[in-house]
Image (cartoon, rainbow, N blue to C red):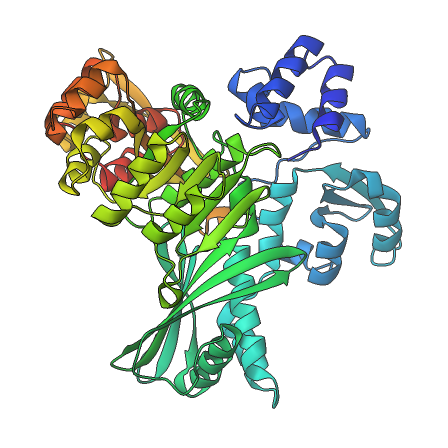
Length: 549
């Protein structure tokens, strides 16, 4: 959000925090637990309003909270979209004598006022401060619907396909979509974005034009444009507005043509910290403790799309430093990491997870990231790599952390070997975050919750009422009430008693019973706590987890 040095100076100078507070926040940031701001907010030293006010006071102006507001489009239209984006400004009020303009670039105030004076020559231009992310959301009001822009591009005679694809991609990045779906039908091709785990219709193309867009994507992804009956996979990498964007392309023939699904692997994902991913303080302490170990195996479980790879990358970011040799083998390589040697699985050249892992061990690694344990050969090789002094991180398909133990044993891993190498099991799901711009609280009786969801009261406590949150719906969240996602997690750290249990080939129920005895929370319990903190809703938690029996 801010440069740490600048924010520290602002908050300390104006006595919002002490130098001791600042030192602790800086240490928190350097440890990779979260940002300087995260620490201050989590410890109730400041809130967003105080930070905004402090920065505004530094520039001798006022702070305006744009979140949740619906700007007057007639007022905003006084400044063109191009100028608003260039100057990072949004007009929030326009009276007979004065124009109030919000910006996050107060250090460029003189230039902004000079350029805006050409539009408002007879009015005083008053600049106020707003957060960068709030300004980004406000600028979305300038966006015209995708279908409207399609109509304008289609009128042109040349270069239609590249322009259509660029517009679709620009919108996907703007709304932080994780996937783009092109779904051909007889009359039109629907374009849908997966945003925060849910598909939303973004626009539609005439099917006659879709063929050109399809061929353009195939060319960019180095796929065969004359192949229409077999699935194809490819990748596209390019720069967009100064940022690296990687696209993973899948083309599959369906009844009405060829469907494309593009996974958007934006560069910003790899920089997420533990706290930004939504891990609790207890989970962060557990992760840090286990990641500090020199060898052993850490497994992250969950279904496709549950954020396993992103969590593994956050682990890699935590341990990454120049003196550590980190090597990965992935299918595919999703995010490029500094100080990391990344290998792409390639079945045509014989580079599989198992064979690649055996080669990695001869490359003098300290830390190994194995994209997925899929079969007995890979499982056995992973265990052996952990035994020979390497810290190995991998993903695995299992419904819970405890269920990973019997599933790995079913892959012919010897129980005593698994017991001696396993250090931590993590299971996770993703739930949608309540939109911070339109979040509202409500007091709900535990009795009504129990009536709707039998068994939930056992996990709430003795109080008769609880405060829960929901999003009312606003432009920032596209009127869904949700904006972004957060992980709900269960993490089992393997201690001596658990090792002894694993050596006896236990069932998932037995493993979980032992984990509960040690105080391990289920994904449902983690999600329920996050619902009470206002990060998500109970409906979202119940969508991806269930109440433990």
